[in-house]
Length: 306
Image (tube, rainbow, N blue to C red; front, top):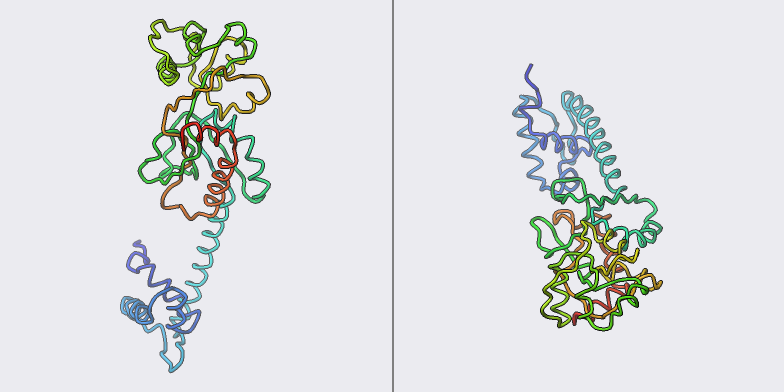
């Protein structure tokens, strides 16, 4: 049996429901953000398709006819069900904030600050994904991403969160054992991380002719490399921003002040078509404020001349 709704535009049913409920084409137009003429045209088109008169046009209002009354009751009930379903979906979506980010950034910087956001937003649950898969925010059910890169991704808007800077880090004991006095002393030191990145740091530090790589460990995650450095196994090239607490506590030290910028930075980004979502706006503003208040980020920006 063919679907009776197939021959009727749902927009006309919505216009009819509003006009029947309000008993006025003018008030229905105001509610729906349409002109009175557009409402009248939609009703006339619906009546023509049905071959029935749905309203009696009176001087100051309209009254549904008997067929119009029957259709009005069904349409109002259907619209109520739809409104409730949409409200439930919207409320559920606005009650959970889904974030995807890098594992090290999440554990070393974001996690320590999220409590403040959750206290300020008790009705919003936060879900953080740190998988290595790059999630497409324009297609997946994820609200916010914190990514390393250029800040230019199709369908997304982005704001710079922090620079992507790296510097040698090691334990105080290892620094003394290796007698690290100048950047050149790191040439023969046990180093942790990618040789290419170390080469970039040596160039910034003015060290030339690094001919014999001394990298002992390279891992997929910065956190693993720094864990090895904390164990005294070598000098890691890592972020002084993400490991500011360990530096402040004396667990790690920076033998040398030079930093190297290995990418344009870490960016907070969101789908362009959802820029006004209340939960995205709240989290974005809070996150950027948190970054602006971080002394390690300010120090890095100053060192970069920004």
